[in-house]
Amino acid sequence: MTTAEPTPPRRRGRPGYDQATILHTAVDLFNRRGYDATSMGDLAKVLGVTKPAIYHHFTSKEELLKAALDDALDELTAVVDEASRRQEGATAYERLREVVRRSVEVLVAHQPSVTLLLRVRGNSAVELAALERRRWLDERLAELVAAAVAEGALRADLAPTLVSRLLFGMVNSLVEWYRPHGAFTPATVADAIAAVAFDGLTSSNTRP
Image (cartoon, rainbow, N blue to C red; front, side, top):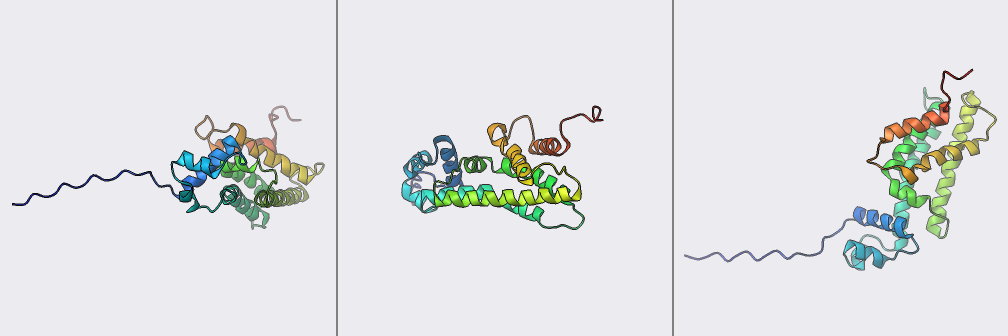
């Protein structure tokens, strides 16, 4: 009768990380320490892996930054692009209001990346490209504001470029205080910002 050999114990090694986890950790470090002050060595140390393990997924710190900024911009670009096109049965005013609401949802879903985006100052080709995409968004939103003015839905005494920046400014302010598990849901915040932006704060009982 033979006795089975015991199974050798499984070797415990460092855990591997997929691309999404590496990017998430990098964005967190960039936001806490600053992009320029964070090295690939810092990222490897936090992850508990070697730098070559990171380079298997991202070739450079700049590629990590680009991926993070694209994460912040891609969905918002799609939202604004869709609203910019004429839609049967939807006025410019309705599309503008929907952009504001959906922008809140995008920011909440991508808050760390949006936070990083709002700190970009154009210090590299990657940052300049991101700023150019932000300008495109501002321009498209301003065009939508102008179309809503032409419909007679919005007041005409404010520059559309100013209005678009104020609208995005309200949405972007969420990065400073919004917490996903706080008192307000994304839908509640989206409704509140749209109401303040388009209906104002004055009670209907006090309006002339």
